[in-house]
Length: 354
Image (cartoon, rainbow, N blue to C red; front, side, top):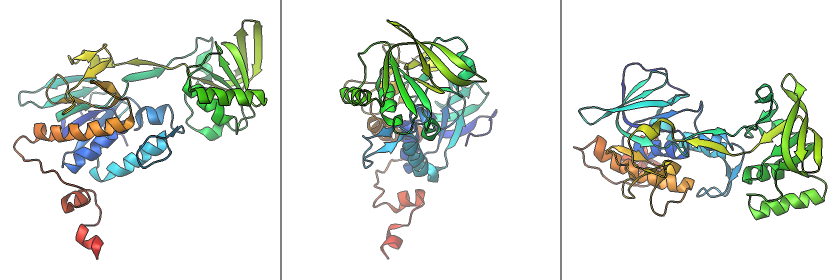
């Protein structure tokens, strides 16, 4: 899906930095207005955190979907934007942005790509994120073979002896989920106080009482195994060392989050980590540069995917006026506009009525 490297600036209406749900939906809103887009993301696939960190975790607050997984949502968004044939520059990081004399931007990536864009949408979620790794000797040899920081294939944990480390929602959620398919599940946390939803903690305690989950108050101490395949994990506790048979470790210690190069773009920031925007257009302090989704900040901000969708819609209408200053923007509904239905490659209204 990733586009070929471009050393000559390729022209687009809008360059979207971040291919998570908000960035993907922005392609749809821009496409309805007749604007084309390119998406740039450091990950090697679309979906952002939804696809990278919790592809199989259920999400319950997407309108019209009582429940959908992170990967499922990504797949549906990709299906929705397919008619607009957006280009993807994946596995790339934006390394520079230069404003041209005509007001347009040239965006460069660390792979040497050059992108000519009339406007920029920053939809980078929480910024550049990497999992916090446990400080264990020899960890590298086990990563992506026996040690994981996200569940990308739930079935690969079936019949396994799993140790889950962490005390937040991810650790508790996957403890409750994987217990139904694992041979054994051991939850390890340095304290008996958790940062997860009380209902999840209560459910874990009930499983512990039934003997289906083992909880150890302690920390990871050492990994044992051969050729990247775990066989045992040593734990340190207040009462002494504990050995646990394990062939899978899920470490949920949170993320290291940074704005990365975006922090050097000269935008007004809140707390050094979020980009300030207005609530009319979601434009930043730099004209023509918009920030949508979790990366932005304004009074009353809610960090929800549906909020990002709303912001993408308003930013797209504002971007039209930037990119096409001499054209009049006509507001239309997909249910009644044959022009929009044509862009979506669906049957025209009259034809559908026959």
